[in-house]
Image (cartoon, rainbow, N blue to C red; front, side, top):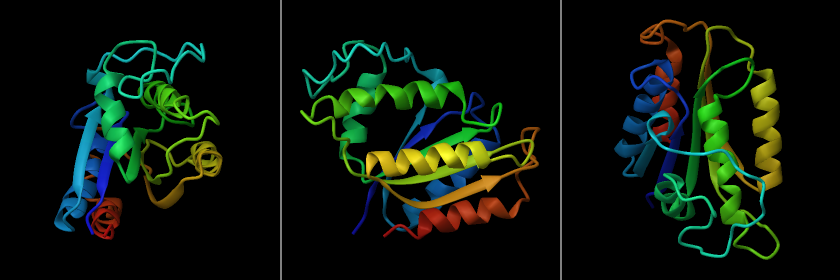
Length: 182
């Protein structure tokens, strides 16, 4: 049975190393007959969460702010798998990804008990260095808090310049992770 996969691309570079991981993952996922929708967050108009607890009144547009998150919400609600893809910036994810992810709380506000929709998740990450510990700490705790299930991570260090990732084995790892989704 095919799955609906949503990718939140938190890289500011459309053709960067994170995007190469996404491309490989997407090819694998589509080869296994899955549907993939990617959002390039840096090209979208998304404002930070206001912490107003005013969302959840309209399931079609759950946040009180009206911006490009309204393109993400319906895909998010229907998705079986959420892929968080980001470069490593100061030992964690990019601001683009964090900003969009925080805004997904408005969907939880649609539930009287603030329950998030149950999903499977993936983390794809590229970095100049190799210090993924803080992000993995956040990802593991996020997964537990939301009641999600991680189905894999691909973390590729040592890739600073665009294209550095081309010959890295993590490209194949990303493809295989995508292809494993059935």
